[in-house]
Image (cartoon, rainbow, N blue to C red; front, side, top):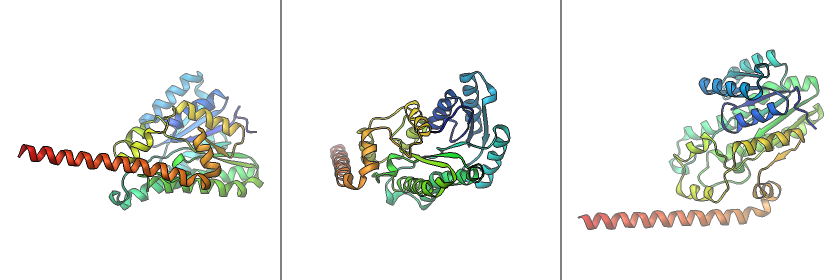
Length: 287
């Protein structure tokens, strides 16, 4: 079991959403928390709120950095470790989705999604693991996604990157276990965050239909699950029965999931076709 009391917990993507909520929960459990995020203003706001939450500025720190830049992250990590000591728990949460139809997404979107979601997870791990190996203890919690368990329509750039995070977690579990390091992976469903709002800007109709069938979780609920998963050394952290079943027996449930997804796609396509037909009729009537 992993105790957070007095531990140094570093959270990437910690200025908002799941990352911020996880930082707040870790503070409540007695940890010293450091945040890394790109947006300096949001990071400053997050730190101010967390300091007020625990009424103790000595337990919270932050450094701005882009997790896709290993040298920048390594510099931020060194400054935070100098303040709170070596990282005991890393929550590799930074990430984001850019949905869209495969044929309409540029090659650059695919590269950016892999850089942010996979390499943005890998670089922080590579920064903290050497010290964990040296000390013979540590905990890594990688944040994947429900879309990292089963491919989801409209997420051809995002899902593969989150599958890669899952693969990294599963590989590191056995490799780092002899060094006393626990590796877990969390698979949140849609969560009410600024990122989810941004996804709506490019989300295809079929993807929106699929998402509408899934209960949106709050960042606080997801954060509680992540922190509980850390404290209980869970290798897999899920937040609903469907995701848990997929994670455990995804191969068996795959046909059912794909069939359900196909129904949403057919329904969305019918609506688009009907809308197009109606637009043509209105245009003809106006002529």
